[in-house]
Length: 239
Image (cartoon, rainbow, N blue to C red):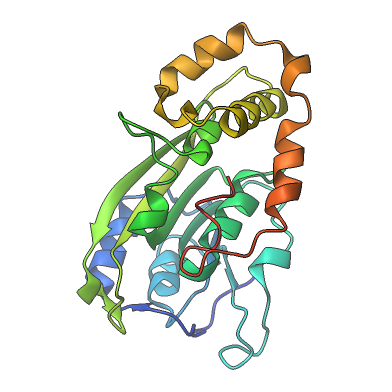
């Protein structure tokens, strides 16, 4: 367990302390919770989290900004229950989300400030959806709960940012079988994105698992060879 000092992060810093306090106090975080923060920046989120709970773990990679640099992408996640609240580096959004949501012990509740364009790829839409949105649909309620102003950051970013909440749903589906099913259809049918989210569950109920077995693992292997997206680090491709 780590008690926070005031680390820094070379990215867009949040400067609106009043807003940060409001967002954290409106979250599910309680005094008994362990909270993981990725990229603590100038410590505004850190300080507000510490007003709620003393159990805060901060992960900072840049050795110029902390005496104990740690890379979140290689950092072992807690084995006990934890939550996440963070203003994440936009350049590795996809990798961060995948690590958290696909972990053996995912966070009990997760709040991430991310680029609006990246967030849209995880949220269910009425017209068309990405594979990532459909993959997580039965297991997670993913919602944009606040849209931040560019002036809430310093330096001012060139993109819009939102706070996204990832909340677990109760599901009886076998996750690995469902992931194979979705990966198979999204890689074999270019119109799959237009299928309504709720209809995928009906289709899955009558699906033959043997048809798609191993599709998700195969897709991940192929995608690991792709270069990251210059702005949102693979969110367009990797679920």
